[in-house]
Length: 194
Image 1 (cartoon, one colour):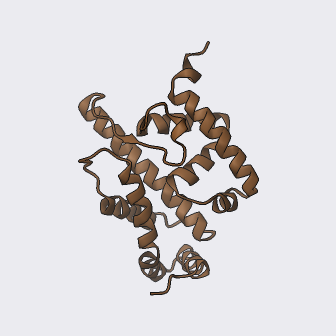
Image 2: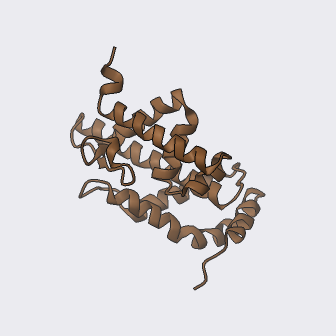
């Protein structure tokens, strides 16, 4: 089977943005494998016995995408960036709900596979990571988006640069600085220093 081109996906996304529901029906089979791959990467970082499965995560993303009728899709990279953002929110909401249900126990864990030095432990708590990313966004929105797109979205340096409209060099610089900032925050040094 021949993989669809980015142009084919972009044309379907734009048709869908223009109200063509059939375009969404044609789009999903083309992007399903990539969404499932991204979801599988996220789920591989989760604790064993997680109640949310890869297929359920992809289905939840699909439901949310189908409701996003007002979205003006730019291209394939934009679509996967938004999908990554949705997966992050779904997993974080799920983790928060589980923590609330257990009153703080049994938090989910997630590792930063490309940035193991971000956490002193091999895994960082997903909720703590989400909170740290929100704090980073308050300080530097672009660096937070770089982490979100690279880590949660699985986008390359070049694709991240496309989404953010910056050079690959800027993406790499932001990526390195964001990892250092997150290391400090997740280790508690950033909040404990007075």
